[in-house]
Image 1 (cartoon, helix red, strand yellow):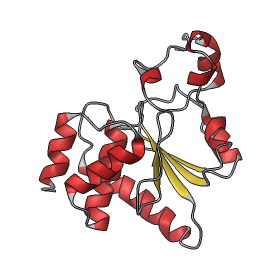
Image 2 (tube, rainbow, N blue to C red):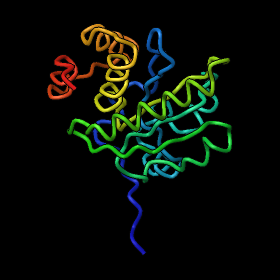
Image 3 (cartoon, rainbow, N blue to C red):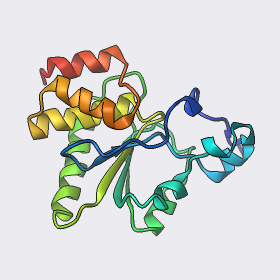
Length: 181
């Protein structure tokens, strides 16, 4: 039986837990929440740095869907969200690489269906990758540009302000600003 990896994601504590709702969207970006197992094995981070799925459930943010862009299943058990009436979609995306058209289309389809099914309520869509910055920002901004007709620079600025951390991977920024898909 393989050993379970209880290590924290690199630089995870440097990033804020949860951002604000991105203006004129239902998106709320956050970093990956970690299981109690991982948090307990890393007690040195202190209680103010702890952030797990239950924190999202208890946040009062009215999240109805979580889209997980991490490329692993090790961070938490999605059933905690599902038991609390929050849909969960895993959309594996490799870090440091621009998501391909198939991944972007799947993200857009998931979001469009959720918005259609929830048009009569204000339920939010939580999106996260490891730090809730680059893959998360790319997918949210790409949706804003393609589906909402938002100017790329404005989409990026609005995401950065809402997240409280800056989308900084140059390849993602260049691709969004070109908007040549």
